[in-house]
Amino acid sequence: MLRIFAILLLMIIPPTKAFGEYKLSDHYDGTQFHNPRNHSLKSFWDLLKWKLTAKKATWPSWIENKHYELPLIKNTQAKAIVTFVNHASFLLQFPELTLLTDPVYSKRTSPFSFMGPKRVREPGVAFEKLPLIDVVLVSHNHYDHLDIATLKRLEEKFSPLFLVPLGNNEFLKNEGLKNVQELDWWDEIKIKDYQITLTPAYHWSARGLFDKCKTLWGAFFIKSSDYSIYFAGDTGMEEHFKETKSKLGPPDLALLPIGSWAPRWFMKNYHMDPAEAVEAHLDLGAGKSIGMHFGTFQLTDEGYDDSQEMLQRILEEKNLSGEFFLLDQGESFIANEDKD
Image (cartoon, rainbow, N blue to C red):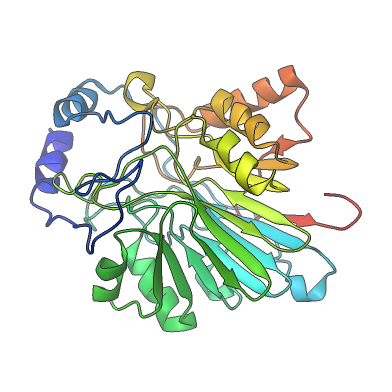
């Protein structure tokens, strides 16, 4: 009953519109954004069916994080330092640029403070421990990726540049964010010696039931002269990984989602499972990949450890354990000259 009540509450949330006029393209028809080779979206009735029939695994109510010291790139000779905050949030430190991806520091990924998916562990890097943030990357407007409360805290403390897909600019500026720049797929922005490109993802957008696909979604490719990182955001398995490699080259490191995949009949088009994440790693030609989008919020039906355990089995079968791995919340990967 609570699930049905939550869905009904979502119906009264004011819609987020795609503000402005955008050029027609293979992913924008003048009214809505869509995926080029697969336009179909699950209906409200599909959503209702899932919520009424879901057999969610039981997750732990709380998990204590291990303590990790946060390495700062200014104290190293590293090409990059990547720290897993949790879910889809990473702290990316380059020698002259520091970024956060899809930061969520709130207790819930929900439009409501009293209900919705609740975190089962603290962020791996405390907000107070964050170094100066230059750029915040937001892949799309779902609540587990675009958390307004967190973005406002970042605005107040750091006044960073917020890079977002088309349609999100006015919404965020109305919330008090001052420096927001929208990007379409394949748009590039140069910051110092770093090139940041919004690349395709196969997903969708909405913050209520009546604004579906009014804003764009995407992935980000960050490239310096000697190191590159691909952040996939949320995505299903499709040809865009090969397309990204073809246009921008293989990334040195890819950050790929492995969770929120069950039940497959509902999730398959727009969320990869671990097997598909490994396929994406190979399609990108990534030097290394790190899994994400697991173990923080129970958004779908799989168990707490299912994604991690499935990924490890597949990596062992394919002898890829050294190429694709997981970080604990708060743990860092340091890309050194002699071993990356």
